Image (tube, rainbow, N blue to C red; front, side, top):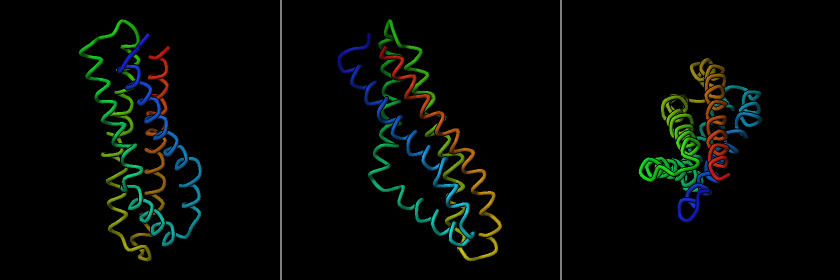
Length: 159
């Protein structure tokens, strides 16, 4: 069984990736559905406000902190190559780093940036809004599953 400081890192990995999975799950299951029911001008304005609020310290500490933690866990795992949990630790790190953090950078953030450039009441924003909701939510489902999978993999490494 994993023990000592390595145990603490892994437990923190479970907590961080699990918290991020919960945030993403909330967006996939009700936030985006609620925003999609609004008229486009209101939906665009609300999502832009959410995207601005998301890059404040409370969420970023968890989101970025989990990425750093997953990277540390991966490096420590490669260096120490523990007798137990190696595969689970590496899978958990890869799921979060690529499926959650990486996907955020290549799929969700560019869509957020495009939306932020649009004036909420314009026809351009109204035309973009349905595609934004559909595509952003689809990629968010993947981020949710990847973050939850990372948490599960880390838990399995502890058992």
